[in-house]
Length: 550
Image 1 (cartoon, rainbow, N blue to C red):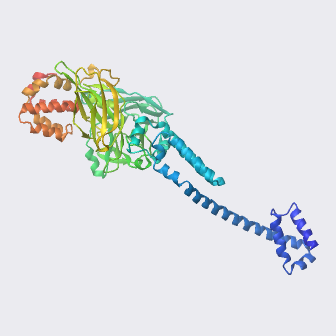
Image 2 (image 1 turned 90 degrees about the vertical axis):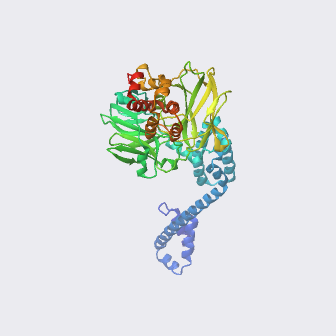
Image 3 (image 1 turned 60 degrees about the vertical axis):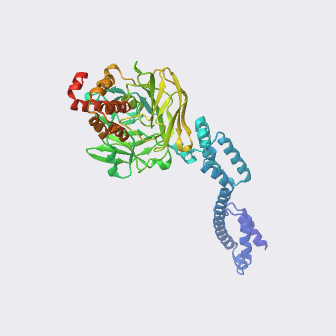
C-alpha cells in the first residue's frame, strides 16, 4: 500500500503527468488495486503501473468531456425552453405590435424586459437572448420617436397598425443616401409632338448614383453622359397577357446615348414589408416584347434593376389585385378665375405617392397649383369622401372610390366650389368604411399663396388649351361634332365611361358640347389637344375661323 501511495504521489506530482484531477486519478488507482494482477505488476515494475494508470486516466478524461458537453447542450436547450415560457407574454406583444401602437411603447418594453430578466438568470443563454432583444428595443425606440400625432391617433382608433416585422424590414432595407447626389433636371421640348409632355434632361458629369428631384428616379452611372427620360402614354392591358400583373407606377421612356446607365431605381408607393417586396418587379418594353425583370433589391422607397439596354420601363405589381395600403398624396389645383365667374373651383386629386407632381402640373398648367403637405395613406378601391370646413361651399361628388391612376391623364377626385372672396379653407379626406376616420387633414390651406411648383412660361403655353378656354361659349353654340369628339376621347382613355354616358344622354348638340367642355376641364391638356384635332377633322371651317393658328 505504501508503494501504491508513492506511485500516486509521483503520478500526480510529476510535471509530465496527464492533466486530470486528483480525485479522478485516485479512482483509477482504486480500481486497479482491486485487480488480482496489480500486486504482481507493481512488485515487478512500478513503471508498468504508471503507464497503465496514465492510459486509463486519458480515457476517463475524454469520456468526462463528452458527458459534460452533452449535459451543457441539454442544459442550454432546456434554458431556451424556459426562456420562451418566461418571456412568452413579451414575445406576443412584440409580434402583434402592441409596443408600437402608442407613444411610450419603448419605456413599457424596457420595464417588461427588466422585470422578466430579474425573474430568470442563465449565464450565456440569457446574455445571447438579451442581445437579440436589444436590437428589437432599438427598433421600438425608433418607432416611438418616428410616430407623429396623426399616426398615433390613427392607431389608437384601430386602423391598420405598423408591425414590428415591417419596421425591422424598413430599418434594414432603407437605402443609404450618403453617396446619392440629388439633381434637378432641365425640362426640354424636342418638337411639336413632345410639346405636351415633360422631357427631363440630365447631363451626368461622372460615375456615381444620382436621384432626380422631380420624379425620384435614381440612375446608377458608370461614367458621364446625357440622360433623357419622360413619362409616356400606354395601354396597361398589355400586361394582361402576362398574367396577374398591374401597373405600380408610371411608364418611363429612358435614353442615354453614351450607354453609361448600369442600373435604375424606380420609386414605388408600397408600404414596405418583407412580404410585399417580393410582389414588385419591373416590366421592360422593347422591340414589341415585354420582359419582366426581377429586382436586384427592393428598399423602403425604390426598386433596383440591372439593365442591359434602355427603352421603356414600368414598375408592376405581380398580383391580380392591389388591395394593400399605399403611400398616397393629395394635390390641389385652383382653376383660373375670370370676370365671368363668381366662385372659385378647387380641384382635389388623390394619387399614388410615386406619381411625379411635375407631371400633374403639366396636365393642369392652366390652373394654380396650391402647395401643401400632401402625404397620406390610402387603400385602392376604397371609398373616400372630402369634407370642407368652409361654410356655403359645395363638394362633388359626395364620395369616390380611390383608383390607382398613373397617368397620362389626372382627373380630379373631388371639386370644391367656393365663393370668390374665400382666401383659405380647411379640408379633410375621410375613410368611409372606417366610419369617417380622417386619413388627411389640413386646418389652413391658403388659396392666395403663390405656388412654388413648376409653372410653364408664356412660350410653353399650349395653343389648343388656349383655344378651348377662349372660345368655349362659341363652341357650345356652333360646334356639332361633340359626340364624335367624345368617342375619340373615350377610345384613348382620356375620359371615363361615366363622362361619356353623360354626353351621350344629352339631347341637343349644344348640351353635348357643354358637357364635353366641362369634362375637358378635368382631362387636362392632352384631352384638349385631342378635342381640337377631332374638331378640326370634322369642322375645319369653324376651327380656321376661331383659331387659324392651330
